[in-house]
Image (cartoon, rainbow, N blue to C red):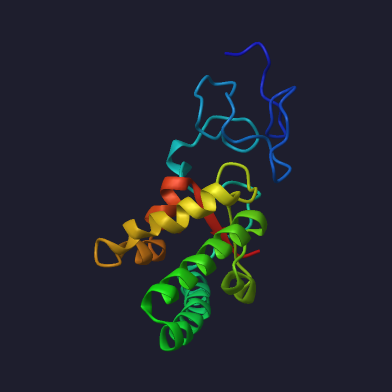
Length: 180
């Protein structure tokens, strides 16, 4: 047992609040098990609930909203690609597509939203603290979507049944897509 008993309000004495006004679910708990969220109220931990949506986190976006935002973003990239390809050729059209994709990664890293996500009202955040990803992680997530494609696009379907509604790329960079 710890020298500081757990508070009846779900946080330990002296612990900093988390991003959603709750205690940090990944902090060292009074029961000595780091990395496993405690049961609300500071009681015994329910290890069967591990992997579920953290308390206080906005609802996760379902597969349909994610697919719709991806479709919108794809159309936004495809139209300039086709126009430039018809006028200037394949090499320049690929370059234009890459520039737009990097721009989308910047937007997603700084605001959590691409134009498609903004249109449907979803946002990509860090799973650990609910903050935006930052440009590096957002660009890495875009590149890692290659892993979602390799097994016959299975990674893009994964959020339909995954508890955290994550693609393979989301799992690697520890991001979640929410729909507040």
